[in-house]
Image (cartoon, rainbow, N blue to C red; front, top):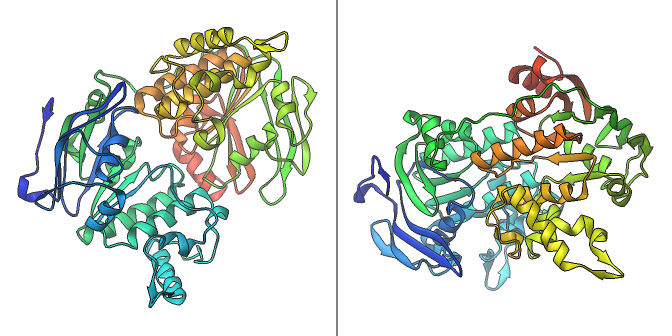
Length: 509
């Protein structure tokens, strides 16, 4: 380790991982990682995308086997050969990409693999009772045991995933970006549950890019960089943010937004008038000019994502009109929107935006394939050349665009989506949670790319759950509450407290 700090003693650690090495073909993912976690603490794991956090927790959960290093659990050296074995030892992991079965009910998902039965007969009543108790414990009694998981919101699905972990007798819970799909009230509830677990002696490993969350919930932390531990055992309350960023990035960096250039805006590029989706949002109107960034602020579930999905044609509006450069778009037609110059980077980039098993270059070019057609044949050399140019321009790492998109970190996957619409030369760009799951260094790069696109004349709409991000990036802000635009103002006339008053109460206190 480059910077050892406040190590837990051998006797005080519930879990100690020492010198963990994991190599994949052509890549050294972990090059000697150390981590120790004490019973009853929240131990935060920090690092940029690609630092090795995901690989480390997959080693811990038995998904991957380390090539070197030791794991000591409750004082005994151990080998975790599978996730099932890790669970039997009392270690549960909830990944950012949830592994629930949509076709099964809430109760069936929670007890999948350890079903309650007597004499070969399923104990449905007891399963229902325990599921109800778990939902009450997690603060979500409205999630009924018989509901199909596929019909639940992403936030509710995460609650089900946590209930499944708690249905086992666990001593260590690993949470990978747990707040990514939660609104502020749900995050507060999550923290209540975490504090209840740690009070019972359960250890929690908490992974998040949101430093303000780590300040609120964390006790100690470990920082990874390039597959190595650069600091461990740091006390959260006494470690400055600037120091954490320096450890993660290897350099001093200010978490800032690119300055607004003050250039005159162009003609109206996107015009939305009285757009409505019954039961979700109603009578939404706004205009975005060429060169302008419009931010949509609001809680998860307020209708922000649904508004831009409807603009894009992914949802069919019940009423209202959308125009791009004065041209009215056909309702519910993604093809019409794309042909008019509209691009969308969706909230769930892995499931909705990318073909994860396809090459990076194909994910960049897929919206512009007609440009590479030559007499009915695909000019693959030109396709690769243009994709490589954009990957270099946006600093997509690693540079090899033939590898599968799923191998990239979250920040680089987001750059691939931006590259897709750069190639398409879109006139309107819709961005839903553009920095979710993206580390602090990549965030700064993405903010600069978005501002550069606006400065080139693109009309940009940004949806974000982070008020600071909306206010720092946008020129003008719409505040959305329960499917209604309750306020509109230049970003510089708002502050975080005003926006929070509006999203919670519908007015400024």
